[in-house]
Length: 150
Image 1 (cartoon, helix red, strand yellow):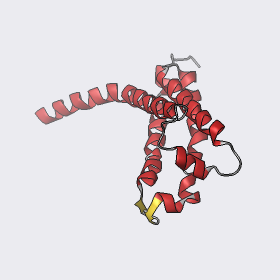
Image 2 (cartoon, helix red, strand yellow):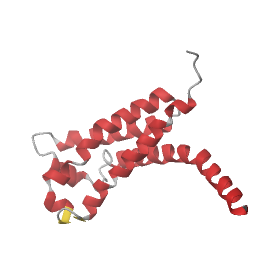
Image 3 (cartoon, helix red, strand yellow):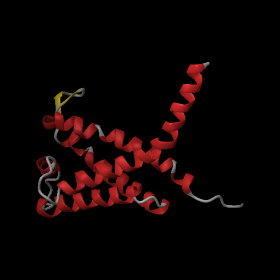
Image 4 (cartoon, one colour):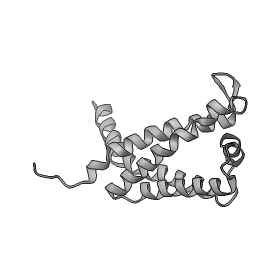
């Protein structure tokens, strides 16, 4: 019985703090990783250059992708529902491109296809967690809206 009470308190704290912490940590990661690109210190630069090889100038593309990620992060950090929705939309537009190296550069992302991943491959696959986090944040967007009468 005592375990039940402690468990309810702990899960109550998790339910209260978890969604905001998820939103802010997701936003922070996007801002942080995004800023590395225009600053020229992102470890992703070579991977992006090798993935997008069809005539797009990396000198333009890399900073653009970085600012896109910063915009996603800022939208997630601003607790207004329409802004959050915009950030999640921008993220879901961006995400398919992050998986391209899995198809285009198998020699770079796999040590043993299809299960053994290099560090680059692991970095890409972790985006599945980012997508799941965005879905949770998006599912909670209406929680901060005032109730409307039918």
